[in-house]
Each structure stands twice: as structure tokens, then as C-alpha cells.
Length: 313
Image (cartoon, rainbow, N blue to C red; front, side, top):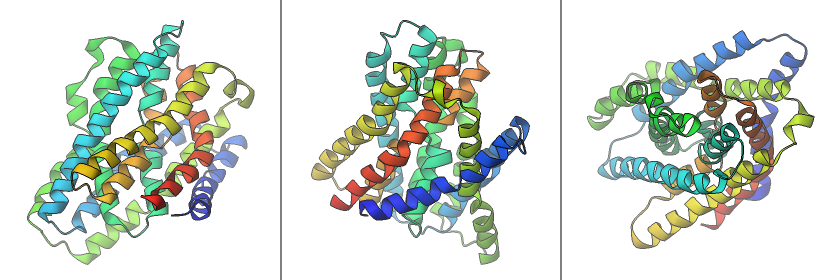
């Protein structure tokens, strides 16, 4: 995919955030409404999108192997980036800012932006949605374990229960038997799931638009704790992961769709969950909020540049 095509697709994607921005500026949507939209996305739309990907994919040993590759690589990359981030941001004087910057530098917005971007750039590739759904399980496990520990430095906030019992994991457990046994689901059900999953991208971008409207731009562009995590998250992290995958691909058969999926996910801005968990644990969440919004703005430029590299692989 060339730079121009990628830029146009990403521009259209971010244009979907404008209604949310306008609604918030004119006070036609409030925090309660935004939270409700987020719940619809997390508990209905994104799991349904994942379920449809499983139900419309034909089981093969190769596809099952690729899903395992995706899980292992996604988990491994996240741990690797955590250690790199920890080394970089441990010198920040403010401990809350240091922990927020560390989490912001390695955790991608895989649900609200990763899947919409993959849909926009590869609309006819259901296998990439399948691999992204597998990474969602990885991401949700990390959110309630590694990310929670990163933000708090307290082991009691690590929740194995929440890591294993969440919508993406439950959907995966429901879908895997149907997938492995090639159970045929009526088209009317597939169409219904497609309609419900189809609103994921516009709803997710409306939420992003609301978040933009809530942030003071002058405050957003102040502080090194915003720039360094964003540069690491949007440029260093995805290129590092891409390099590792290309090295693996030279020695082992690694499907190009896995490479594309994980590279796009790693190239996404900081996950909204970093800001949400900071608030949930009663921490100073200003750094987390600034990293989420700034990296999202910066990604308008970096995503087209990085995805243009995929055409060279």
C-alpha cells in the first residue's frame, strides 16, 4: 500500500472523529454518554466483530498455527517493549508520570484504533481481523496484569480474574469450538453480526473526537513526558517489532498477514485504557491523558508513513 492511499484512508478514518469533537464542543454529548458508547464498543461491537471473523474463516491447520504465532509474538513484543520503556522512563522525577509514561510507551490502542485502521486499510482481509482479535486477548490479559502493575507498582492490583474473564476472551472461548469444527452458521446470523460489528469504526472514532475536544491544546504540547513516550510508541516500537518479525520470517514461515497485523497494532497510539486505569486507581492521570491524546494526533502522520512500508515487504 503506497503512502498516498494510506494517507487518504487514515484521513477518512480520522474525519469520522469530527462529529464527536463538534458534539462535545457544543455540549451536545457529555461524559456519561461517552462512557456508554465505550461500553457498547467494549462489550458488544468489538466482540461481535471478532466473532464474525471466526465464523467466516475456514479452519485450516495453517490458520490455527498462525493464530498461535500471533498470540506468542504479540505477548512477547509487549513484554519486550515494557522493559525498554521501563529503562527509558525510570529517570523521571515524578513517579506517577514515570509510570504513566512507561505504560503509554508500550500499550497500543488495539481495540478503538487498531481494528478500525486494519478495516480501513485491508477491508477484504478477514484473516487480519481474526489475528487482531487474538491480539485483543493478549492485550486484555496485559491490561489487568502488567499494565496495572506498571501504573501502580503494587502487585495487589494484578487481577487474574479480570485478565481472563472479559468480552474478547469469552468470545474467543465461544468461537474456537465453532471455528475448529467448521460449524456452519446461517447467513442471516452472519449478516446481523456484520451490521452490528460494522458500527465499530465510526463509534470508536466519535469517542476519539470527544477526547480531543476535552483536552486543552496548550497544555497538551507542554512537557517532555508527552513527546518521548509518543515517539517511542509510534515510531521506535513498531519498527523494532517489524525488524524482529522480518528476521523471524527469514528463518521460519511467518505469514505476511501476521506481520501486517502486528505491525499496524504496534504502530497505533497509546491505549485509552492507560488513561482509564489511571483514573480507576486514583492516580495522577494528567500525563496518561496527554500521552493518549498527543499520540493519537501524532499518529495521523505516522500511520500513513509506516503502513507505506508494508508495500516494500
